[in-house]
Image (cartoon, rainbow, N blue to C red; front, side, top):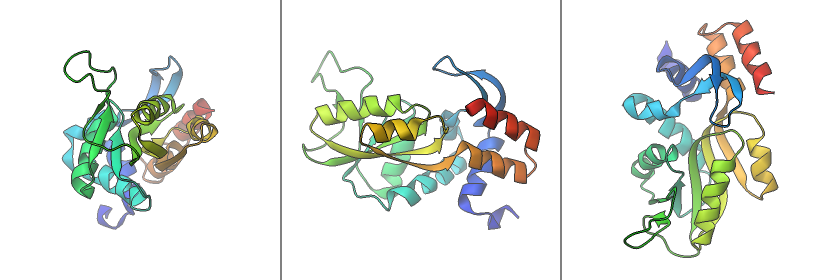
Length: 200
């Protein structure tokens, strides 16, 4: 049966089945409490799931115009690498901290001033980590207008990006994932409602 599901629906189920989507009570990196935890770093341990995620990104990226993929450190890197191989597009990435040795580079990879980069990250909550990456890329002479994530947590990130003049594309939202999980009896309607309420 799974063969006939639309790709994004299949991906939502896969993410749940590999433990990348967990329901419960969690404390997020920001210190906020959440009823859902998304651990997309697990994708690298599941090649088939990573291929599904790559296809989801590609379906968005194919409609955009850019010269380079720019992955955020660290979560965006495995995804950026998978996309670089899949789409045959060069990848660069800003370092978390500029090198204090060697060339002292802040951006790893090869690029030219004036080229356009699209930022790749795993998900968006507030959008701060993506905005930090954009600052570093622009400081190195690159143009950045857009970013693509796998999942939008629907907690204001897209609006925050817009306020700064950038467009964010997400292959899926948390509420869409929850609807799929409920439709396929992975979670109950009650569980879904609890999570949605916690995101507000």
